[in-house]
Length: 343
Image (tube, rainbow, N blue to C red):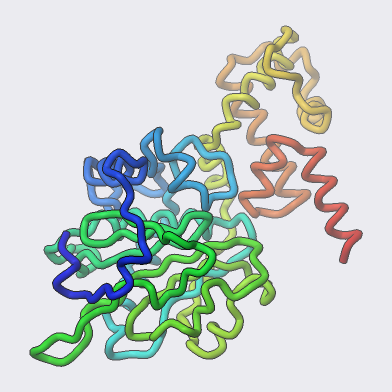
């Protein structure tokens, strides 16, 4: 990919180029080795391995769940990505200065941003048939501040004093006098009660901001939303079927399955005992002796379905709460009580 012919980068001295053996380069190699386009799936929902093992702590640091390196691509995700890219293509004609992705905490906003990053990094110099886009610089602002530019990867030398004006600036086309494509800026700072990077300082023609935030006005860049009026994209709650499918991609899934089997078979476990809250749900469904008559797969499938059903009854269909309940029901219950007390 070649960006330098379309952008000026007067502040390149404020950046450090990462070495070629950095884990982010490993991730780029992983993306280019995909057997299919990241927007092409035979059926959905479908898992997508978004990290090589060496990169789990970097590219997934934006995700507040313990995944096994895969994310679940929901049926609506590819269309949302295409909608975002359509707005990006029309940016030099129409107004939206970006996109606000909102939805309840734990509903999949960070996953969508991660997926969008994956799609953008797969773009080449030739126009992509799915998005009608060519490669453009991408700046990721999560727990990491990373710039993908001209086939190389950079980070700010001084992250605490970084400004969006330090990003490359698109040049004007000499033929039609329009600007070259803006720099993608992907922001995902769940729970940050501040205006990150002072987004209003950004020249709208230079950047296209995709900002992930919960509906709480304290948790998003309010002044940017009010002044730039980005397109709002809301994410719906997950269905029970999707929650079960997503649980299979969690790193904690195997641990819970082992504990369920140990409880049902009445055998000692090296992985800790099944939480009492879980045991109560399973005993209410069937006597313990009946559980022991099933196959391992039957036990795990039935027990997982029951526990997810209990979590939905208690906490709704927010994926993060569901998966937290499956890992630590007592801790989740305490956090909800503390939240209610502090209201």
